[in-house]
Image 1 (cartoon, rainbow, N blue to C red):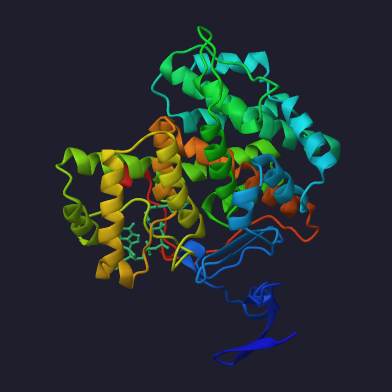
Image 2: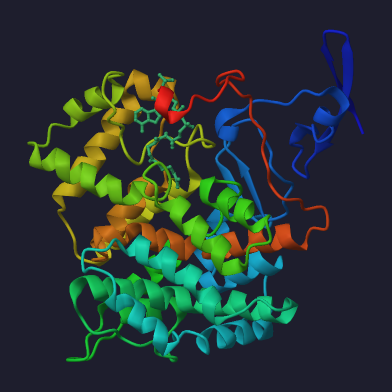
Length: 424
Ligand code: ACO
């Protein structure tokens, strides 16, 4: 194993170099503080590996994304979402028998405990579905205790099976329609679309184009190594919090507009540009103006610096899905295309290597599928679920896992005497 040498004042510290299976190198600083009394400072963790992981490989410079070694392009073209769940969580592609058994287990756990239905009554109709989703997922821990390994295994199935039901019920709540119960003869994606769009008053059959599009969207979002929400799941899980509590925390982290919440903000931004007369150049100017807090939503990525491979797949598929749905002209799509064009040629964006990310196109497809804008981040959460679970499980099964506890460099006041209230 090669070593790096760090010299500071009179201290000489040796740092082992860890090499990943794709040749990624990292200085192992796990003994840095005990050997030297010094810590590292890395706000935003852009230079910090928080763990080793066998699940997902990303090369942001080359635009590579692989789940368990399989390129995202091949998975998106050929796999079914439940297959990807299995692959991420258990580490190998399921055989036909394994997949059939896995699907069967998922199908038999889609119903919510009837008491949980009452929770929905307490929310106002304006409640954001992400607020409902995160609290309902955390609440599953009140019903399904994590007593042993077998219970954990079953809870993983329950979580994947019940989350689409919670998500669809949260939508029905906002539109005031009755809940549509899961139907066992439908696929995972078909069942979700049925629970979203069917009403008791008339028959509904799931359009195959929507089922295919949803399958692909969920797959593209299924894992993305140590992003904000996944790191949150690992952070919470490192204290040995249960699966539902850890994933509930991840859902909340995903909600932010700089992360999964960006897909909702993309559509809102396009609507704003349209209402303001469609002047795309004005908004590009605004995004570049350092005195303005406006950012082009759906542009830029912490890791991808040339292109986001998921965005590349979605860009092509957006055209196909819209054509199949007979949407020839969509004013928001026109604005999106202009924005993309202007930004891709603009020096500011080129210099900073800011490209459309996955959220830029996913919002456009979800909108065409008639998924309401407020549900976009919920859709992201449905896709990310197997990734969060796989990462939580990997951390939990690792005998070297410790509670995550970063340090800080204190910059506040030095010691001073407390002033009693009467003297202030
Ligand atoms: N519009 C305008 N300027 C931008 C944008 C943007 N969307 N994104 C980054 N920049 C600029 C920054 O102002 C900064 O400029 P400077 O060097 O002159 O100060 C530079 O590009 C680098 O940006 P950072 O914020 O330092 O990059 P970071 O890696 O921290 O952030 C992020 C990445 C959060 C994705 C950022 O690009 C962003 O806010 N994008 C818009 C929100 C978005 O689409 N989020 C979804 C990400 S994908 C996902 O989570 C699934």
